Each structure stands twice: as C-alpha cells, then as structure tokens.
Length: 367
Ligand SMILES: O=C(O)CCC(=O)c1ccccc1C(=O)O
Ligand SMILES: [Mg+2]
Image 1 (cartoon, helix red, strand yellow):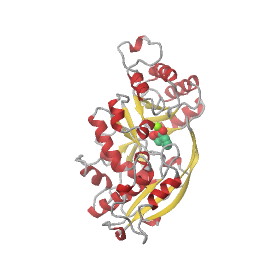
Image 2 (cartoon, rainbow, N blue to C red):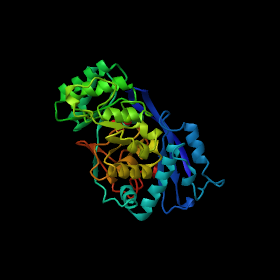
Image 3 (cartoon, helix red, strand yellow):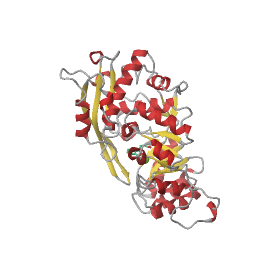
Image 4 (cartoon, rainbow, N blue to C red):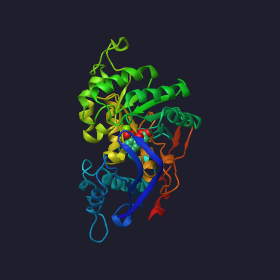
C-alpha cells in the first residue's frame, strides 16, 4: 500500500456557518497486486477537521495497517474504525473496491450495487450547484449563474449571518430565478430551536426543497419536533395540520449518531451521506439503501473532496435508484485537482465513468 500526500486549494473560500473552507488536504491511497488484490486500486483519504479525524490520526490509521515490508495486512480494512477514523477507512475501502471492480472488469457502481442486490446503476446522476455565504446580490448572482449553466437544483449556505439576512438572501434568489428551480438551504447546525422554528416558518413561502442541518448535530429531538411543526415557536395558520412546511435534511447528525438512531428518532425527511465522513463508499451505499427502506431520501455529497473521492461518490450516487440531486458538482470549486475530472457535469447531471473500477487506469499516474 502506498500513500501520497496532497493538498488542493479552492478557487475562493467557501463560506459556511462553521467557517470557511479554503483548501483540502489528504492522501492518495494506492494498492496493487503486491497487496494481494487482483488489480491496481486507487483511493483518497481527505480528512476535514470538524467532520472526520485529524490528518495525523488519518495517516497513523493508514500506516497502522501496513506490514513492515510495505504490504497490506490481510485484515487491514477491519482494523480501521469507521467511527474513529472515517477518512482513513474511506481511503483504503475505496482503493480495495476499485481494485476488486477492476479485477471483475466492471464499474465501481456496478461492483458496489451487485454486492447489495441493487439494480443496474444509472449512467448519470442529477447534481446540485453549491453556493456559499455572501450578500443577497452576490448570492442571487451565483445562483443565476448556476441556473444559466444548466442546474435546476441549487444549495445555498445559510446560518453565517442573521436569520433576517438569510431570509433576504433566499428571497433575492427566488426572485432572480423564479419557481422552476429547486432551492436547498444548508445551515450547518447554526441555529437554536427558536431560530430554526422561525426559519422554517419564514422560509415556507419560498418553497424550499429542504433545510439541511438546521439544528446542532446532536439535537435529534429538536429536529423531530421541527419536522412535526412543534418547534419552540408560535404556530401559524399554515401548519395547523401539523408538519413543518419545509422538509428537514440531516448531515452532521449522521457523523455523530448512527443512521439507525437518526431513523428511529423520526428526525429527518432526507439524509445527506458523505462517504469521507461516514467511513467509505461501501458504508454509504448500505446506509442509502437502509434510509430508502425507512422512507427517508438519501442524498450523496462529499466534503469537497479531490477527484478520486468525488468520482467514487458519483459511482455511489449512480447505484442509488432514482437518486435525488446530489452535492457532487464541486469540481469547479477547486483551483487545482489531482487529475482531470472523469465525471463532467452538463445540464445538471454528472456522467458516471464506465470503469472498470473508478475510471479505468485514469488515476494510476498518481503514484
Ligand atoms: O452538498 C453540497 O452541495 C456540497 C458539499 C457541502 O456543502 C459541504 C462540503 C464540505 C463540508 C460540508 C458540506 C456540507 O454539506 O455541509
Ligand atoms: Mg451539509
């Protein structure tokens, strides 16, 4: 197993309620026949503080599963705890899955779905554009650009400013693009229960597709109450029959609590699943299948990963039948990348490479 450190910068910082993301660092993970796998395989471990383990914990977890002569222990994957070091597990699980899929001569999506009794994967996946914090004019202009580029679903970061200011931003966006565009708002856990309750009431007239992580990650009861329209707020006439006027998505909550706990709490309409934060593509596809069975819609996104992990997430999304728009159109947020993007986005859809594996041998030059 080989590890190659990398660092890629964003074209400009992505403003979120939890600060700005300016660059992504991590390791490309390579395995080969010397590791006992049938073909070369490439993975990516890109820890993001606040979402995963630290870069040093990630590196030690990966180095810990190697043998003294540079090979891989046979039980390597089982030795990496997906809760403690999800990015490390992602890197190795992806490299091994890429190798296995290439050995089988089929795409990563086909390999992952066959193991879970899912139907033939899609050839492209719908994606949303991602727009960071900014003033109302800049936010509306960024969303308009995305719509001009062919997106019909756009996610806007909120929660970095007052609720009044965010409502003004989203109003400006809705006015600029009209009713035909699906809008999502991601608060990254910024609001308390009273603010979140006020937010769903005030955003209801703007017809949002969902509000993502309105409350802190641990507040599953608050999220369940918000969904039922019984947050700490005055009820208005619109939700007398109960139910939040805006569907609720959870993201950070999944990195803190296991999926079954989130599902049992009735805390979400949508779960946002990030392979890097949840320990690997295999785990996320299994989680997506379980969420669907429980009536909760899965959405696949990344932590703004580099091209290897982003391509893997596209394969995962392709394996989810009729997947909702996913947060995978983030290549354009990066100023540079590890390799050319094998999943170009056009008309709001990312194309899925045919394989074998992630993208044939396109990433083998990374070593
Ligand atoms: O979902 C998307 O549109 C892109 C990914 C994204 O927003 C994100 C990227 C890095 C870290 C956290 C998040 C998030 O969804 O909260
Ligand atoms: Mg989010």
